[in-house]
Figure 1 (tube, rainbow, N blue to C red):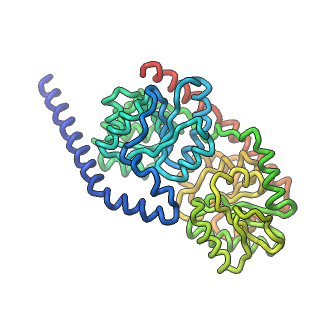
Figure 2: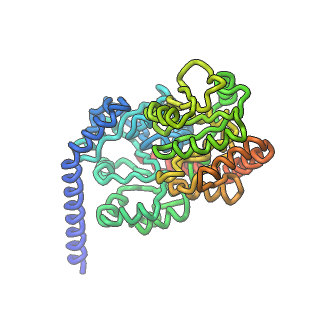
Figure 3: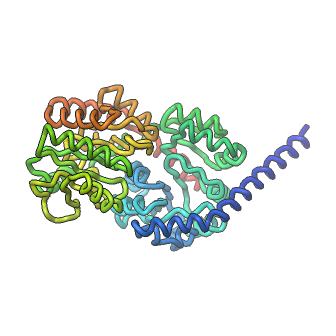
Length: 439
């Protein structure tokens, strides 16, 4: 029986190696298309054309023993903020490296951490790029935010005996089905992970169904609930209020996507019927779309101005389009009502907790798959309003702009939900404490 098991294991390992080889080959074949896409996106966002060598693993050599955290884009970088702060308090002498895959994620990291945390792009999951990257950064511990499963990268960490954690991990049913198409490769990749810190019990069960080892998967909660406002938040809001809307009713539509701004503007037209002085602060998810959104506003008959302009909006301006990065939290603090975008179109929604924490009453569309558990917790307590149509959005915004007690009740309920779900960062730090000394 023993020889049979050994032979079976060898064949299984060989099959996985062949799958990894095929996976890498496909990535190499796709590389020209990927590079063309980078160049194309760089037309509107020059950041995509910068630091391109990093995407092939060429980074400046870092001091050995860094704690490396990967956060794919803006949302993950912000979710990692409290964890980075806790790491720097616990190990002030240890360098922290943050990787992202998008220019907006990199810019957000620079805004939040400055020179205290080095930030580079994560390389493509190509064997050579991964080897160059890991040789350059020599991490003591790798922490990957949410759900990023990269076979070559994870195998490279295992070969170098670098402990790997998935933190704030979530896995939807749709993602589970996709990963199970390559079940053998996915399971062998998850075998490289020492701990998976899942957001919810449902996420934990899905990781187990995907092949993760039961003893390695724990539930720690959602790091986004541990977010805190900066010490100077009130001062920043007051400064923007003087500049932007000192005496006008205003509402903000944050992180909107193409196809969504049209519906938000339709709602603003209805809001103006009840509150002619109302100002809409429109924040596209990608600031490089500001000119496109401004053109859309003009064609729809609205007067608008760009947030980056130094002047205050004139009395005739009905929309301010935010063309900068990093100001959304302050604008949530400025405007008493916030629509959180990505939810009227099929983008799965965006994080509403930032708006709740900043003191805005939150309204959202129905498409919130990416934050389903968060929205379920808020909806259960009446801490968010979900709408289906432009007319419903306008009705909710208008009602809340004219009813301060109702707004305050919604915001208070939301903050109670946040307090009830805090604690993920402490549980995650326990996992880091457990594994980092072994590095």
